[in-house]
Image (tube, rainbow over all chains, first blue to last red; front, side, top):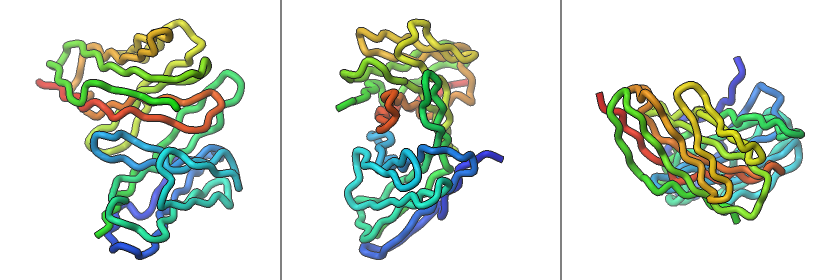
Amino acid sequence: EAQVTQNPRYLITVTGKKLTVTCSQNMNHEYMSWYRQDPGLGLRQIYYSMNVEVTDKGDVPEGYKVSRKEKRNFPLILESPSPNQTSLYFCASSLRWSGSSYNEQFFGPGTRLTVL
Amino acid sequence: AQTVTQSQPEMSVQEAETVTLSCTYDTSESNYYLFWYKQPPSRQMILVIRQEAYKQQNATENRFSVNFQKAAKSFSLKISDSQLGDTAMYFCAFIKTSYDKVIFGPGTSLSVIP
């Protein structure tokens, strides 16, 4: 089954304790992205990657790190989490736009993170 | 920078009726894509419909259709014959054809009333 998986689905942690949220897709997609969702703000892009070893900042990258060492994986790292990073996080993937055809983003199930 | 605005935080509609959700955006780009995503209580993000900016014809997907006004930078979603399963958050989104950043609007919470 084609899917994007995220782990963990729920996480409660404390300020300053490093954590990693994993994201994996099995569709051979080039483009992968992380978003955070907060009430009234919609989804805001944190980082995106156009391919292996190629990453770039979205609109809210502060406090986050990513890496893309393999095509299928795109982990989100919070080196020193703070309470303002409490949010719902989504990973997504898609084929890159090529020519005149666009390929939809497939979203993971979300990770609910609480930082105390 | 691109921005996406959804001016209706909440809406409600009677079952079987028609409802229109509004979305406006700001960009200096000429080539881009626009999307509507649905997020039911399960939190899963589901693509509802998409529109390529270079196409003048409005996209339709079964009961869902859009009114794309490129000059006005408007992209509204019409849901016909509303069903209880349409109850969800709806997000409008924008991406340039160079396919880098994706910009989402703040969302509209739609409730379908039996």
